Length: 415
Image: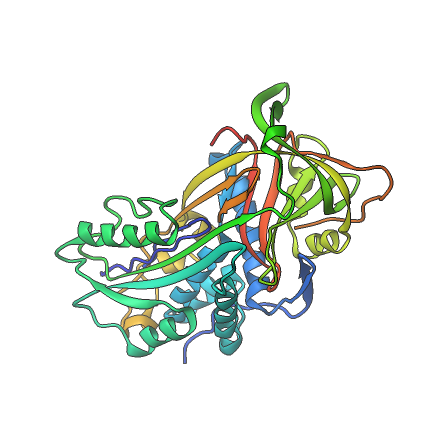
């Protein structure tokens, strides 16, 4: 049995490796709002955000990640797997589409990804934001022209032929170099040794990179060493940034919600949305990770003067995702009975691995990387937003409403 390898990279970089047709996914019709943008629930952005919430909950509930920081790019994973889904048929396509919440309408799905990619790659003098897809094919293996054309036309994923059979290690290094280049060398060795071998036939990669400055930058001279509560009676010392400016802000009995915009001029708007629970328990923040609840919180954001205390942090994460994706509802793609015949006309291919790496650095100037809720806050005395205990954060592209990066910070100084 031949194997299909596909990879993807995201936020600051993330990567994944995967190896009359059914339609990719079903999404009910309604609307929600992310970052002040009302998003149709049958859109690519809405599906991406639902997948983001689902994957976050799955990773957060995994005992292997208990007490860990989390960070990933849902859009990077969605992009790579959407290209995979274009070549899937039958139950394989149904499962991938359902897990990703992809629009069932082919035109809506393809035009949706193309439009978001075009927006992300529009370019700006105020920030750096880009995403890229690519196909890497075994040079002696025949793929269907229509699949190659679809990947190139709608996802910008052009094909490069490599010698997986005779030179798997050299091929792996070539792909990893592409990843490093697209992510300003923030993501290295995306594909680990042994991930590509002589049976690999295709690798699909997606990379997304973001570097932006805050509209309201923090004064580095005001940054001080302070305690961050990581657990009951347990603290660590972190570099805490201090600011006092007008931000979109809201609060409930259980949460404070702060939106910190990035400088954008007249280009695509991006912002970090931070959900800070009242106590050190993250439950209130994680329960808000739902399209409707997050939309309600964000709709309640009101610009007001806020005193902000926010830790500097750098996160580097990596996740092998086959187990998570299979548990979330797409096991067939990883099995011998997978149907990826839309790629090559056979049923010989299946996904052999999915790797995801991500990086984010948050400091006084802004964010390099590549990662939403609030219900009505009071206006009166200046609120204080002191992020000295675990919180959830998202980086959102406001034109489409798509969540590009997402994570939680349990310990700013640790993994």
